Image (cartoon, rainbow, N blue to C red):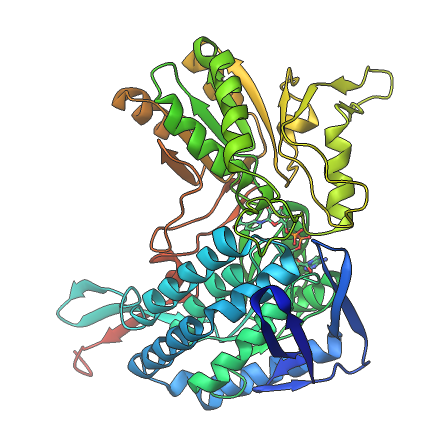
Length: 512
Ligand code: NAD
């Protein structure tokens, strides 16, 4: 159930689990099918791992259910806290190995990106360890001398969790740690192309002392394992992070099975608005990070930048200069190198999808009789040489973009951004909200009144003022509109895994 992986850039050889993780053991899938996982910076196969079936999901749900009934629901918050504290120490001990696996499998730059993810994971694990006896205290409600009412924040039991490939360990940790803190057990599915680091992490749960069955991991195809989780009658709550289209399928699966509670963290097309009084240097630094960090594969990426016309030309000139100085593939196209700040995108499929946007011409979605949409495409850095087999996309700026065209409305999910001028506040707030998504937003201004108005008017779950894509693990996160349902992280990251139980306690004397 293990294979050896060698990562020469880190002088690291590790024993990598490749089985499904059920009852604290790595096991084969029922049909013994496997999935190959590819290194996106070379296009080469790293290894393959077992891929689950419906029967495997069923097995894992049974393990999680037994663990909940027999062990975990009898575990005190203090004991759960100690286990999570231990886990945080182990993640800290192994952070370089976990980050190296993440870089190998997802292509994210090791120094500027994967290590940062690990720091956040360690912090949030300790945060949730401290939350086991907080945030879930319920309330007492005065009724009368003869009746006393209170609420309990009760766990759901078995929770299904589905995570995407852009932050494999971080997205899994956002979900697992908060869910275990509140006394639920879990069956989690990582993404097809990034299952290695999460399987490695599973070993640390065993070492920390988590009982068998509390956390189970079933890698596999979304349409099989994800679908089975969505429909399983033994799962009482499902938490999904991924695309809006698959998120809608999760809602449907819940409706068609047992009406399980659903939390969805889905796509985004987040605007950054730079007003005439903004500090341009600050705006450039943050909006560049906001689109190029993680190679543009961020649900909250500020993929639409609106700049007041008085600053537009200057912004384009300085933004381009900044990208050339700070963002690039590095001389070896190796995300393990310190000079690599933009890695490859995750797969050939994503590479091909993004390449369509880079052609500067897209079909109009409504009618074949209308002209195609067009825009101007500025590749800020050169394409990699032909000999390079990685999925590298150069940082790209789109200008003269029609407001309702795919560059402005669809998630591109790569290092590519639209930059559009505006004149008035009313015009730009309309443009900023002109999307079915509502995940995040950023505003750059020195005027507190403009900022405050924007905070009120923007339809987004997060507003960054004079920064962008600067997340905090202790602050709630989630989307408006089709970016999702519910919130994770902070206090919400605990509450989302509890349901309210109302207790009516009669104190009346019999016969009174
Ligand atoms: P995806 O929706 O294709 O896949 C997400 C997960 O769902 C994967 O594990 C996949 O295997 C699984 N899945 C696929 N088909 C399924 C099905 N029919 N039933 C159940 N599960 C299924 O998304 P992705 O391409 O992995 O990730 C990118 C998307 O995730 C982007 O849209 C991005 O915005 C979004 N995302 C959102 C957040 C957030 O917090 N809002 C965070 C990260 C990524």
